[in-house]
Length: 113
Image (tube, rainbow, N blue to C red; front, side):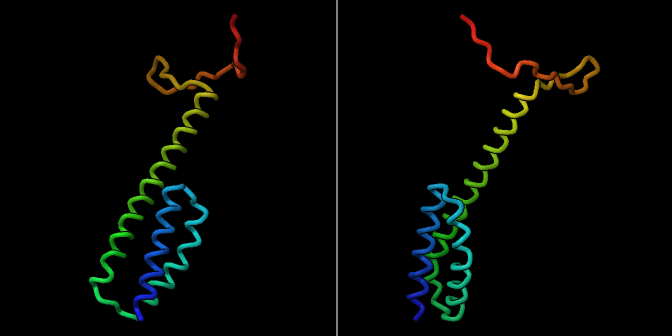
């Protein structure tokens, strides 16, 4: 009865897609074990290749979404690091061409009339 694991896997991939789109990364971790179990069931059932093509397409789509999410999280981390560096000081080149840090002495906003 390969149809039941196929349907369950398809449904799980849809849930994974929704979690990726909504950036619900905590939910993604729970899908791993379910996917492994369903893949084992599919391996035992040996469904026809034409039945697996839609699953493969969904997996590829989710992989692309996951790659984009990873890239977005990395970019956000880099931006936060850059903002933190600006708060600590300004990196400039000294007369000899080496990078130097000019400390930020004013840690509060200055109000002007």
